[in-house]
Amino acid sequence: MKNIWEELPAGFTALAPMEGVTDVIFRQVIARAGRPDVFFTEFTNVSSFASERGRESALERLMVAPTDSPIIVQIWGKNPEHFAELAGALDELGFDGLDINMGCPDRHVNAAGGGAAMIRTPELAVECLRRARAATELPVSVKTRLGYTAVEEYRDWLPKILAEKPAALTVHLRTRKEMSKVPAHFELIPEVVGLVRKYSPETKLIVNGDIKDLAGVQELRTQYPQVDGYMIGRGVFGNPYCFTKHTPTREELMELLKYHLDLFDEMDAGLRSKRAQALSEGVDVPVRGLAFDPLKHYFKIYVSGFPGAAELRARMMECKNTAEVRRVLADFGD
Ligand SMILES: Cc1cc2nc3c(=O)[nH]c(=O)nc-3n(C[C@H](O)[C@H](O)[C@H](O)COP(=O)(O)O)c2cc1C
Image (cartoon, rainbow, N blue to C red; front, side):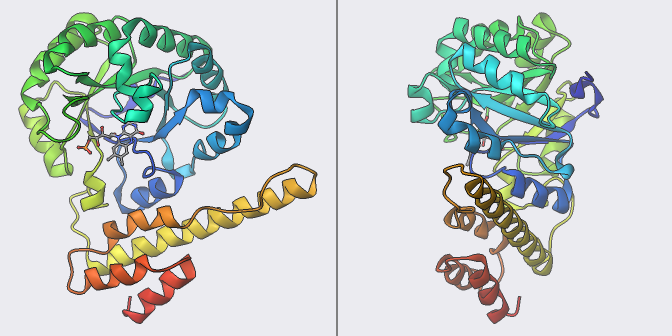
C-alpha cells in the first residue's frame, strides 16, 4: 500500500479534522472553493463503531466523496481492542491514512479516556496505536497537543509517540489546558523539529494552531522551512477559500452556500431512501434523513462581511428546511 505522506508536496496544506464541521458535505464545499493537499475527516469513536447500535452512524460519518482524495480518517477512543476493530474495517472504505486523536480537550472525550487524556496515559496511547497499525494497511499518524497541563510536557510526550515511528505527527501548538485561549507556541517549532529529527526522522511533521490561510502558511514556511505540512482549522470559518489566494465575492460565497444546500439535499434524500428500503426489508430503522439544525452552524461562513449580512443570516436562522433557506435567499436577491 502506498504511503500518502510520501507523496504530498513539501510544505503541504491540510484541512484540520473538526467534529461537526468537516463532514463529507463540507469537504466537498472546500474542494470546490479551493482544496488543501490533504483532507482529514471528523473523528469517529472506536467504541461506537464496535457497538451494534453505533455502527450505522459511525459508517455514515466514514463516507467519502471522490473529491476528498487524499483523505485521512481520524479516530479516537481508549480501548485497544476497539482500535483494532475499526482500523481493520477501514482499508476498504476509501481512505489514504489513519490518524489517531490524542489532543481533543473536550471534557466528555477526556472523561472517556480519549483525546488529550492519552497524553496522561502514554502506555495506553502506544498500545492503541500499535493495535490499530497491526490491523490496517493504511499509514498511521497521530494528532496531539504539546501537553496536558504544562507546555514543557512535549519534551517527554512527543518522544514517546515518535518512538512508534508514526507516518505523520500533527502538533497543535498548545496544551490541553490552554484550549484555544492563548496564541499557538510557534516559537517551539524548532525544538519540535529537533525531536522529530532525533527520534523519527521519517515522520512527517505537521504544525497546527492559529494558521488562518495560505498567506499564514507561507509566512510560517519562510520562518520554519523544516516543517513538512501546515494544518488549517478555524480559518475556513473566516474564509472557505483559505487554501487559495482568492478573496471571494458575495456572489461566489452565495454560489458556494447553494452548493452546500444542494449537497445536503442530495445526501438527505439518499439517506431517506436507503432507510425506507431497509425498512421494507424488515430492518427496524426510522425513516429520517439529515438533521437540519446543524446546517445552520455553517451559515455565518457564507453570509457575513457585507451590508445586510446580519439581517439575512437572522432570517436564515429561522428556517426549518433548505427550501425555506432558498426562499429567503431569493427574497434578498441572492
Ligand atoms: C468545531 C471544532 C471541532 C474540532 N474537532 C476536532 C476533531 O474531531 N479532531 C481533532 O483532532 N481536532 C478537532 N478540533 C481541533 C482542530 O483540528 C484544530 O486542532 C484546532 O482548531 C486548532 O487549529 P486552528 O487554529 O487552525 O483552528 C476541532 C476544532 C473545532 C473548532
